[in-house]
Length: 456
Figure 1 (cartoon, rainbow, N blue to C red):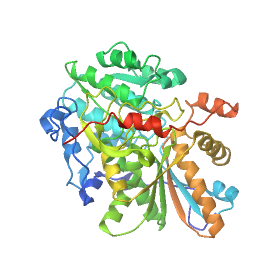
Figure 2: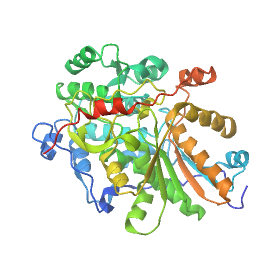
Figure 3: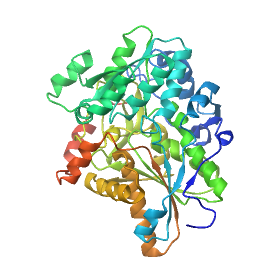
Figure 4: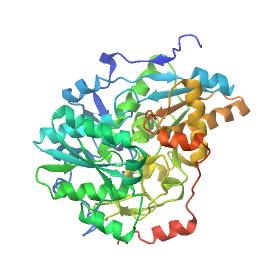
């Protein structure tokens, strides 16, 4: 072990960030506004308040305030599982025989098993403060639904979850955790909503997608008095809440006197990646420091690397606002891969703008290579990683091996978003040699792109 660099670095409670950081405040090119799907005009606060909580709408539309105070009630909740550790992967470095220094920010030390609780408690808090009865949401792999059910149970709110059907079937125990916390869980698409019935009619036997589940959750929220819809990724407000990850990471690095060279995060809708990179990206935008930032996505759902930067619906049912983002088309339903949290057809508008401005890079990786990295990491570092996190592990290993070839002593940071204990069906398929890779063809993507809305 290197002198003065511990395996795990924790901040003291008194050192925890007291404010979230809004990276949009430092962006020269702001993310494009959400558009009304009917008029194609920017969505107003009044229009968005029919779907989202009022305080969250303010955060969603705020492009100028760099730091937003974290309410004391949320800080008190955070203290149950935060600050989370920044871990030096000494064992992995040794096995790889690399001169690279590898760190990961571990977000799996809470019952939800992931970083999602950081935003779930914030959104539930604002719903409770507004006097609402409950909230609706979607979930892919189940981390977000679990986190929100925990937050709602803590605050005494009702929670209705629409879970992507393939995950609902593959991960019954994740579903049961949500139910244990009091949430109702419906496989999506379902026959319980109008939009669900339409999707099933158009795609019989579909395994679902996050876009489908979002449509159903929004329909129920907007048709049920006292409810609002909350989202676990993609939105500006979510990246804001998740900035606690990057703020803690940077504070821990500063405490160690270390600066990362490469920052790597898995990318589905953008919550983990955006949260991890925010303060480092802020420094980059302000010209204070430079970092190489890499987004890692599945080859089966490659919105950054093969998508189009265009306005698109955020959901398959086309009832949500239009967002300008890297997208595969709202009608794209990815293969039933095992990284359920990365199966969204589009990417956060904030991250899409940063990527388009070439302030970060993106790579796609195939599923079997991801699970090879996950298995290696579990055997060496002792943590069973979530499939989503394992995308970042794959590329962190690849970058460390490049350092071995060149002799460069790069410092690498990646986000370990959570644990994979509810993902054993996926691990079983990998261990049994039954896991396959799926990459959409250009023809499939073109068919999906043809459905993109035309914006004047």
